[in-house]
Length: 147
Ligand SMILES: [Zn+2]
Image (cartoon, rainbow, N blue to C red; front, side):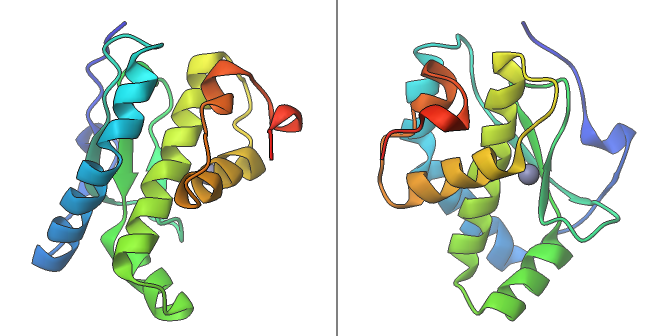
């Protein structure tokens, strides 16, 4: 099922700057195989990212109702701020954020009414470690995560 949601309906789109555009492109390329894996089970699955002012301290947000083709919004200022605080590479901040929000999209696709923060973060961290993360959309809730 498709949707026609666009973040500009609810948020101000912002100019991310060249460095962030480059890094985000690289992150999206690197998670392509994860997206393809998900698309084997959820047809037409693909993600779209936008740079917006989230008007909060969040680095990213999944647009509710878009789980069939997830819309993930990134806040450039908050991403850079988070990088400054943690000292982690921008690539890692952006990648963790996108995969975390992707986790929320999968929770919604699964039919969850409340999107679990711990599970989304666990999904992002396990993905980063190179673990099999298909438990999120194939096997269900966090209690069943294989180590
Ligand atoms: Zn979250």
